[in-house]
Image (cartoon, rainbow, N blue to C red; front, top):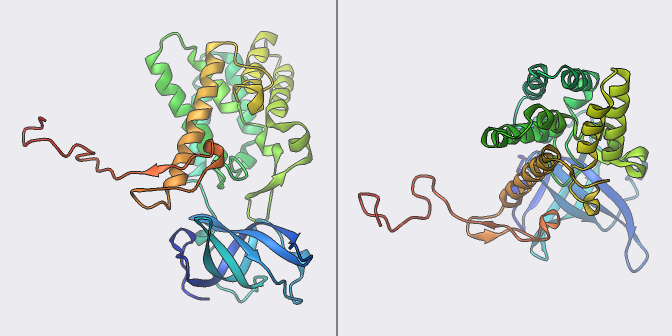
Length: 334
């Protein structure tokens, strides 16, 4: 194998060859009626769309599987201001191919067991016995899947352990908000945060290495919001939880996307439900803004980000020691 160059560092006009993750692919037809493969290749630093215009007869299309390894040779082209791979050669990975999976699989930057413990310790510290029973039981029942489940297919936290990373980020934000506003019923907010995306573990289908490849049938027909509310409602009934508490928790799940246009069944109708929605929005958008400028040079704009209202995100120069304040005298005065 050639020396590995990370996807984020690839340059237009250069040719690369190595093992990559086939994030997704589809067989499509050109205007002339010939088949080609539209794909997305990936490593732990990022992803890149690609086209294989001529499918070699030796390639067994039935063996191509999303979220699996593939050997590619390709040149990087500029397509409407974005990098795109023109695939020159493609083949399945062989046993003799030597590569480090840690170079390829995108994972959460924090240990998953530590993040799981952070959620569990918070729930175990609740003074409310009903909330403690519901949340700790939900975490225990789903621990094995939570330790690996990505937070999404592509938009945000689409890495192994991404769901825990997203939930912990929200919980930390919720605790900061609760420290400012004494009227917040903290345990209600924290409980809502921890369980709000619990049904994503059944909404997604994952491939051989654990990344999301598609939505499950129930994920497409119902979605994690409705499935999550039902799961918590059933769990509360099993644990003999007060119906009012069950309804409050279900409402927080059903309303956490804010408005029906974004998938919520209802809008938030009490403070903690509103704050849950805002924490979700804050954490997801922080992640997306960071991803947008990850491979954007300083002083330039990213490509348009559909999930951020199709905006281009600006990566400005910043020094934490002096910021943008270049007109300060020696005494720190203007």
